[in-house]
Length: 170
Image (cartoon, rainbow, N blue to C red):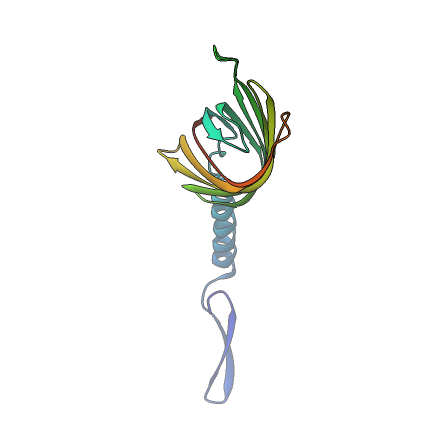
């Protein structure tokens, strides 16, 4: 091995021999440490934490979407302002990151949405979602879960839910 003392026997006599000199060993060690430190300081650019887009779903709500990630936890708000037919929609969901890679993100969500039109209905539930990243900034989400809907007219329903969105990541 380099830099280490090797004992050799020659004609019954023992002789010490170094592969490299001590100064060369120290120089190699310092070079490795400096190069390793330089490489460790090169970091990837931070992942986008804010999303703006459009979303539609029973649990998450329908309309304009804002999503914010802070590490493994996130928050999503969907809002559709009042329209000429009197529809208003507001959705709020908590998100937690399950798996993250360069082009996909797998996450869970739980929350609800309220719809106001002729009567008021609210949907609560949760599920899992898959985010596909296109070109580094465009995200398409496909989500599936199960939700419970209650309305002011007294109706109750429990159904599977599908959600989708397209957003721009900042």
